[in-house]
Length: 257
Image 1 (cartoon, one colour):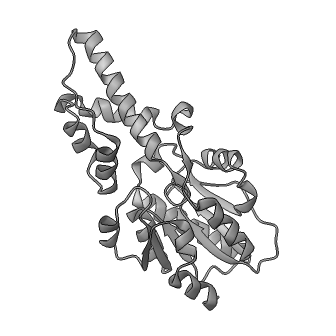
Image 2 (cartoon, helix red, strand yellow):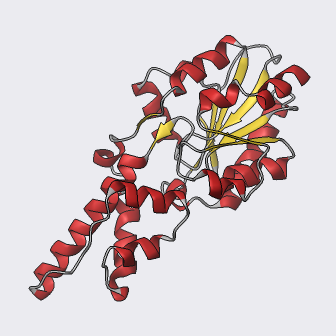
Image 3 (cartoon, rainbow, N blue to C red):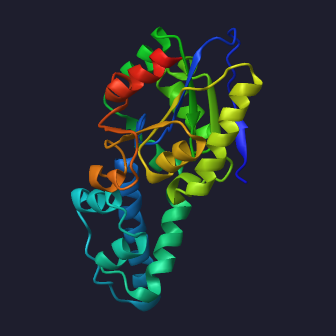
């Protein structure tokens, strides 16, 4: 079972409607960090091979559009590596290096707010909605990003993974367990989180919401395409967090509360 860390707790009277939301994708655009990690991984592999064998690898750098299209359509990282010209016997070395460096501070600095995310968060607060983040990111990383963007005070709780590589690996069962834990925690504090919604940009978010029996809204502005997300039959598909909270499905959830 994944370990979660609760960093923030609201001290308001238990009367708010609760909304659950992923962090990477709905709130944060990670595309530049992931692409720069990929490029740095290739560069490091090339340098190491040159030093050890005195010859260059025939690598083929994918453009950001090519790389991100493959990520959004769930092309396996192994296939991305092979498409980049990495010999089969070096693919694991490359993937291990990517996993090691993807959360390095000099790469994390490339994460940026998604368009409209700040407005969406402020709107949720104006509506009196308790916003709970359920993320495979480590809570310290989430908190650091929120503080840097002056959003910490608008997030009521953060449920994250202790494994710093969990977000990159996107383990569905880990997200399912985290959402279950987040829902149980809201109940224990006197918030009855039904009806409610899980908003996210991956199959893990959709499956977690479906297992919990709540509305699921998938966002296409993150790391999965519309066509890929549609396979998992979420309640609704929207492009951004702002559009999601203004959608008919969201209004139905709030009116039913």
